[in-house]
Image 1 (cartoon, one colour):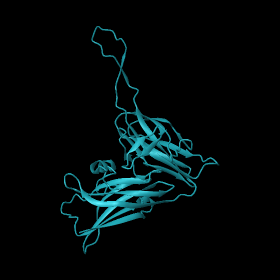
Image 2 (spheres, one colour; image 1 turned 90 degrees about the vertical axis):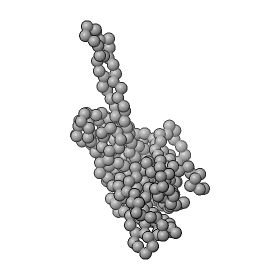
Image 3 (cartoon, one colour; image 1 turned 60 degrees about the horizontal axis):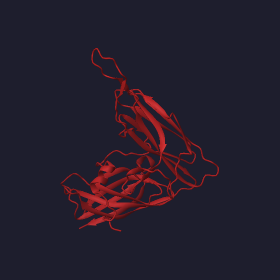
Image 4 (cartoon, rainbow, N blue to C red; image 1 turned 135 degrees about the horizontal axis):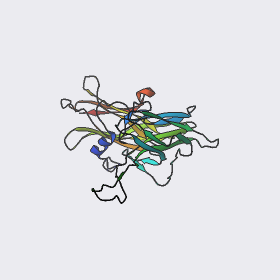
Length: 290
């Protein structure tokens, strides 16, 4: 199967990653991350419960200037091959969700400006639970209860109230429960260098996953002109392939330095565990450029 039949959008995938050269890592012990839910910060940005680890804590922080209320729930999402998370109404083959295994409190929080709140998560493993990985996504949805009196002119009487329409924001993070022996391998397939419409160099390809657990890591790209050492040209942090998916497309804009010419050298792409998890290389691939 060619990269064209996979319908990979170079620019769309780059925007999806939030890729920028040498960006900071998003990992299990990552610093607080603004995730698009208004002024809500969440840390860490993913939770993995396995082995003897049966509890976890999330720290929520309202960095806005007004109180904000968030409702917390567990939802079902599936990842596409281009990395987009989509809601799924029905359980499919290979889907295993953590809803029945995870308990958390509170389920709704009112955050005052610049005040933190802890959400506590606990997992309960039934005796007859099958070996495998179970995943749900914890959704933090902003809710608005604001209403305002109907605006009336002097001498008129109020006839009711007017509801203020306020945009509702939400963000989800993965909560993963692993039970029993886990194994996972990954490898690069069809990696090649191409160009964006404006001519910028783009590394395109996809990762293939096998095993009974998801894989999570950082993509690091180095380039070495003939006779010279490797130097980093870009990286994308926090790339996951969730079960039951087997493939993940990627497209990386390379160095914005126009002086770097990707010819006569070797382009090396590495998929590594986050630094907090040791930074070991999971798999790598090299392209020799004429």
